[in-house]
Figure 1 (cartoon, rainbow, N blue to C red):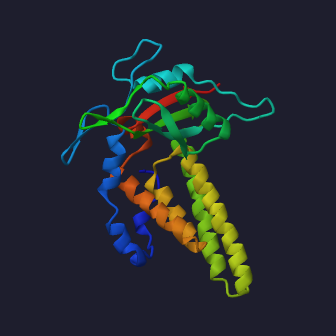
Figure 2: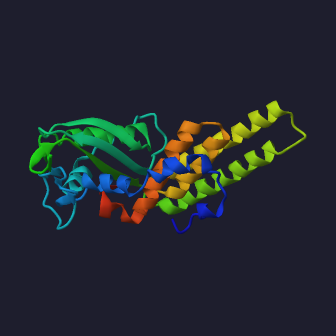
Figure 3: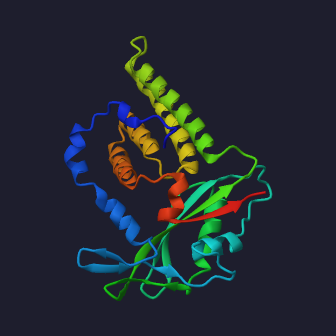
Length: 268
């Protein structure tokens, strides 16, 4: 994002992973779009038609996604009575549209709140039987579908500002962790304990920023940096792979609806 500090300005030791990252490229972007675009796609010798939601209960606005209109008009939020706050952010749910049009394998790709996540899943499940399955060369085929739902409180700051605030806090904690690691006045044990505490806090702030900006490559980069510091190498590699995917997509929050289905729910 324009407002985030360009992660490429920072050095990050990737030599041990160069060969692996060479195998990660545009294929992720292509595969992601196969199940999302509302038109036929030709991939090599295969004609791929993504699954489509065919039924809505309200008059459709031209060029609006039918599944988004369904969600905006039918999604019900059942927050617990004891809750004294209303969460906001962008929930991303991925699921499979099977060959017979049934739905399965629901996965929360971007977490905001357990109740909001479940509300989106429950509403999508209500659409079972209303999907035309995807096809490969005219043959029905199980395909993944991803839907985003942005829960927005009008009087709150814009999502970009909220993400930036958490991002800046995350960088401060990361650099504080680095300073602790280089503090010769501390024993090795204290260096590790105190620095790891800062890196974990940095990760928490980055997760909080991702609630608002689920497809930001810079956030993924700094998560990988923290995982490296914590010795979590598998998580670091997974996050770098995600970053490569996001970079190939070059997908901003404002452009979500161009590539995926984005519903917007205004909260009271």
